[in-house]
Length: 74
Image (tube, rainbow, N blue to C red; front, side, top):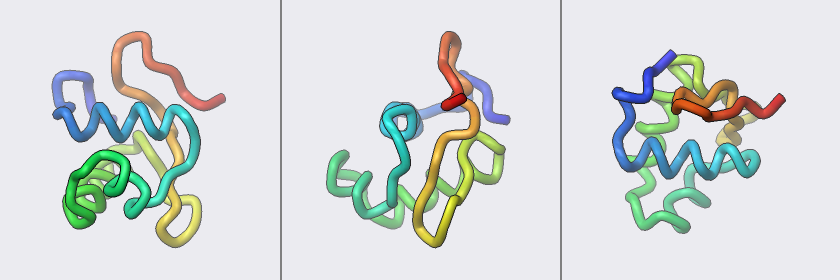
């Protein structure tokens, strides 16, 4: 799991969006202005560390929010 200190601004935004529900990389890129490849890289990092999971091809959901006071979807 990533720790709160490991998060950058893009990770924070991704976690905010994942807390609201499932997302796709193109949706996040459109909403945030980050490049699609950068969003894919950040989502991959969150998956790699167990903070998010790939539900289906290109669809992601939150597993655990590493931020203090953060929540998990359950």
